[in-house]
Amino acid sequence: MKKEQLLNNLHKLYRKDPWLNELFKSTGLTLDEAEKEIDRLYKQYWFDTVDEDFLPLYEKLLGIKSNHKNDIEDRRALVEAKWKSSGGKCDLDLIQAVANSWKNGSVNVEFIEGKINLKFIGEHGVPKDLKSLIEALDDIKPAHLALMYTFAYFLIEDIHNKMTIEELQTHTIEEFAFNTLVIE
Image (tube, rainbow, N blue to C red):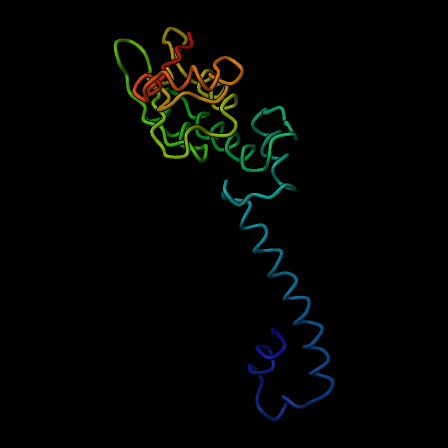
């Protein structure tokens, strides 16, 4: 690809020269490889495209103990949250930004009666790595404030092996909506 671009920059009398064609062919291949590497490096600047080669560098820089059991999306979310929270003062906007770092879990952050309330409002429920989200928010919140987590529905872990199908059928859906968990 680059060979043709290089040759087109020459006067038309030189474009058919075999020596120049070979020179530009090898130079063009080298430039193509360099362009691919530049594109790859550019992707490392964005949390949603950083690859597994560069992720450990971000984790080390931010003091994150890497858990390679987590998939790359969860690791990226943790890096993004840690990066956003390393700025200074903590307010609702910062907590909202950290919560938004995780995918598959839209969160609304409010300050209600002296507590920080995180209400999961998305159709996808909660993020896959909810434990890391809770830990990240606990790290940045003021120590004297409690975090409340409000879930739109019961989580499977709340009812699995705790209620039978017959017991579940005796309850209305309203009884299951908006389960609140307070972590202090």
